[in-house]
Image (cartoon, one colour):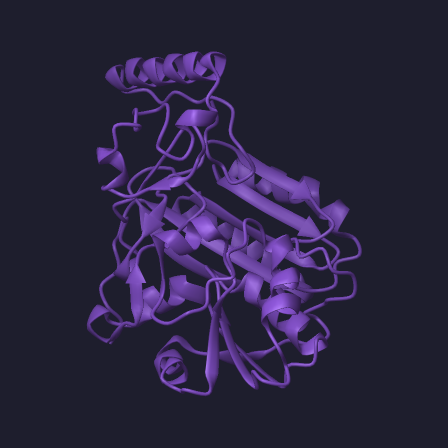
Length: 317
């Protein structure tokens, strides 16, 4: 039985599909127009290899946009996962044109041509228990720090572009015959599995639907997941049942902070944490303090202060 999922008025949909879209640039305007009309915010990336993004809006709005996208036969099998939040977790709508919908930086790696074997969340625990399987977390270091699967290899990467170097230096197709990979929603594993097959690894598996689907479907009592799952919006992290987690975001460096991190003397709400305090210039600290002051004033008026936001929809200083 699927465990109870946190419900809220805002639907957050993480979506992607690898599909040949040579006319992707022509999709930007109609996608933007429809999403804006439906009150949807978040980020969508379009490239010749497919579509990727996370968006949030009303139930009707999300359903309308997904249905419109799936009318294109190339996107008929569009993968999407949902969670819920009590308020809009994004500040803007961005529909951007890219070379890749997830940047690996290796020419010729195309999940439309070859990809690893999908493993359902219900079958994932069995794969984790196989002593012959090397389990690799394909996410970045700050994501792994929030939570990961028991026994998983941390590639210690700062960006996904560093993953190919990790494979070349730390992985050996002659020794590691079975490799299982996972990521937040499944998309990075599509590229990572295609890369590893191209590098000569024989049996490559990846978690279908990613960590989010696993946390949605696998009861906590049976789960092999440890910690929370970092997400690229104002929720910062989610736990089992996709309930909002306990992490918050440092406004100085935009890194996730655990409750223990908030106890550090280097933490200043809206300004800094132990990771970034030494790098803050007096000018940036002053800007952050003013931004935080404006946020508190807006909150007192039941308004939302919106500054500049980055590519993942997170407010900047």
